[in-house]
Structures are given as C-alpha cells and as structure tokens.
Length: 418
Image 1 (cartoon, rainbow, N blue to C red):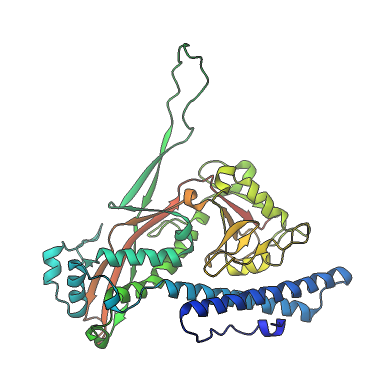
Image 2: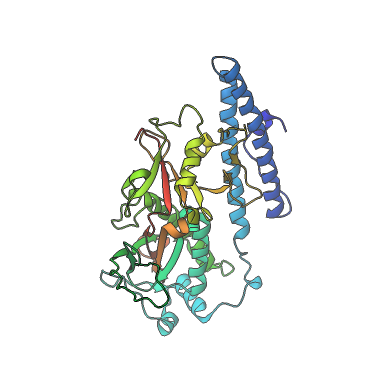
C-alpha cells in the first residue's frame, strides 16, 4: 500500500464476522504506520540537508498522522463491538426473577413485582425521588462497558462501597522502625501521624428515551438497551471528571491537585518535570524529558506504569526518535492492545489538555496505586412516560467518586520553563 493510499479514510470492509473486519482494519493501520515512518524519515532528512522540510512533505506527514488516529479510533470501536453480547435471548442465560420484574416495569410501568422483590431506592441527601435498582446483571454490564470506554477507570483502582463517602486513613510519616539486638531492650517508637483521605460519591445521570415500538418489541433486551444507551454518556462525564474535575458535585481529577517541580515534591501535590521551553519540547534531544519523567517515578511504581495523553499530544510524540534513531512510539502489537511509548503502555484520554505554555498534557505513573475510583453500589432507573410524550424517558443514575490516593505514584510533564 502506498503512502497516498494510506491517507484515505479507513473503510471497514463487509466480511463474514466482526473478527475479520477487525483483522483487516488492523492490517490497514500497520500499513499506514509504515507509510508514516517513511514520510517522517524523509521529512527529517530534508531538515538535515536544507534549511527546512519541504512543505509538501510536512503536509503529507500530518495527513498520514491524522489517518493513523482515525484508523486507531475505528479499531477501538470494532474491538468494543466484538465485546458486546448478542441480543438473541435464546443464546443467553435465563433471566433472574429480578430481571423479569424489571423488564415488566421498563415496558409497561408495572412495578408490582419489583415492589414485592426490592425496596424503592432513595437518593442520598435529597427527598425520595422514586426509581428502582437495576438487576445485578445490568449493573455488572454497565460496569464492564465503563471500564472499556472510560480510560482512567480502566487503569485506576475501583472500589465499590455502600455508603456515601469512603474514608481512607494513611500515615504521613510512616511507621517507626530500627535495628536492635535480639536481647536488647526496645525503645518506645514514635506515634504514627495519621491523616484521612475522603472520597465522596457524586450523582451521575443519563436520560435515554424510548419509543412505544421499542418497548413493545419483546425481542429487544431492554437491560442491554439501557446499558448501551448510558455507557457513552457515563463514560464521557467520568473521563472528564477523573482528569480535571474540581471535586464539587463531581470527582476530583488528578490534574486539579497542586503541582510542584519534582525537586520540591511533598505529599499532597503532584510532581512534574519541566521541558524548559514554553509550550514545546526541548530544542535538542526532545525525548530526554520523557526519560527523565520515567525515572522520576520510583521503581516500585514503574512496573505497572502507563502514559496518559490525548491524540494530539500522541501525534506529536509519534514523530520523536531516540539517540539511536529509533522511534520511541510503537504501534499496538495487535487489535485491542495499547500503543507503547518507551516500553510502557499508552492510554488515550481525550480530556487531557493539548500541548501549550505551562500546560501538563502528559501524565505517567501507576494509576492503579495513584488514583481511586469509588462506585456506590446500585444503578437506579426511574421511568417517566409523561415529560416527553410520546417518548418514554428513563432517568438513570449512579453515584461515583474519585481522587488521588497516592501522590507519589503519578508524575506530569509541564511544557514550561519552571
């Protein structure tokens, strides 16, 4: 495949099964990446031999880079589509009694069986607003889809609680320890200083609408429909909050905490390494700042570390090479896998900021130890057939919280001079 062919929009071929579609899409992605490498090498050679790269070559590199992003997005969508269960009820397990009762409530508003099985859900901190807990099967399915769609949730620790706030104690100065002889007297250790992290859960909602035809169609699995309708809305809101949420009626994002230069790091803030150039990589040895960031993280955290950035930042990094002339960004090894940057998996989070003066568009760390997502058990649905006639609205809510739990596990790259 030539470079000119590679930059065309990806067309998913109609083949027998999603697996073949995904395999074909990944093959086109790898061909485009090879065209990108050749064109970028040509651009770099022109920059070394002349005053600057040819405009046509630069535009060609940008077009192929954009095509790579589009093709990767299509591969992600195909991977998610393959993970979705089929709608044919004959191939699924028999529904539970709760699920059958919930199905009757969704289709006709008949809640008699639900009332006999469950207690009406009440909102925390507000008057009773009705609604019923979804069956466990539906809640589990929503959780799985959020893990696939919400990039930070996929790499963070997730804990389910039954209360409104999770309180987690931690030791500020650590336990007092020391060496002592076997028979020598033990001196009294200093009392540990404890502090407490709090992770309140906030309400997240979506309100899909259904037609009478959909509700009357018995072949349509309404649990599956609810899951698919709310997944994108929940994941989009979560993704933004886990990155930059201010903690007011939403989770607190890791970029909303105080940031300090790594040399002055202290608990309660996120350390960063500065590029030394306002809004750009260093003029020489651009990849060195990435190496410095990797080794700013302690060895125990690096074993499970991820890079987090958006597509624009990834496109800029895709063009960088190390001192030996090798590209530091490597494509995924297979469909559904992550791209690699300097040997560490890269996670795309579109809510990360773009490269700019004093911005922190790149994060690196062990997010499973650094960031905690708190889910309050239970997803509630309130059926509303009156507000948007002839449509039936399903007011779906869940409570989610989040925040940094280990400030030493996440590092940032700041595109600034200090």
